[in-house]
Length: 217
Image 1 (cartoon, helix red, strand yellow):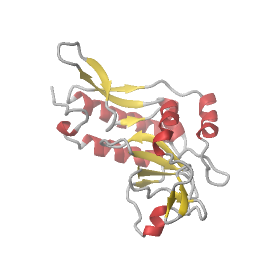
Image 2 (tube, one colour):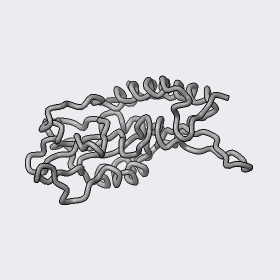
Image 3 (cartoon, helix red, strand yellow):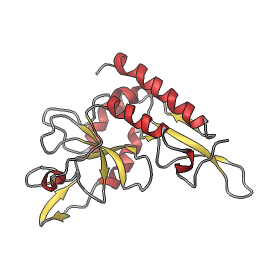
Image 4 (tube, helix red, strand yellow):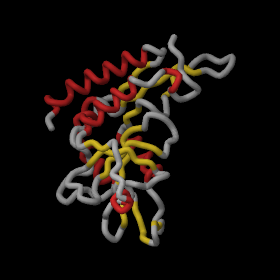
């Protein structure tokens, strides 16, 4: 997936988000490009098992980070009697930087020894890369780097309360496969996911935004 083929579309989608945020008094904040050196180090730092001979990063994510380290929407918030300050929404539109990815690993990694039906399970193959549409934070967009029949990293909506994307350690099959219910919200490339993410975000009414509701100016 070349930069020339996806980066113009990323820019157009970000412009749509910027327009959406301005509609309720928010703003879109974009990080600087990530250096090639940092991009090369990231898969090793993540520590999860990638597909055999493959990368732990989903196709198209590197190209996004070469444009912007992060993308998030902020809103002005103020305590009573104080000046408003720009505050990032913890949910809704928030694509993590590589540093935020590493910081968020703890939210999706379960301790060793956790079992399901007396069989050990793991989430070491999950890498969070974006906030879900709404809180709680135990629902995040993740890259499933391996497991099941995956031949390449796949972008999934991971709910830690359900553990559908956890893997049994003995077979490396996903928990959802045993339950017989294939999850929705699965994407093969970052661009496919980003198109859907932006579309769904822009459909949210301002009063549904976290925190405390954000109302049009």
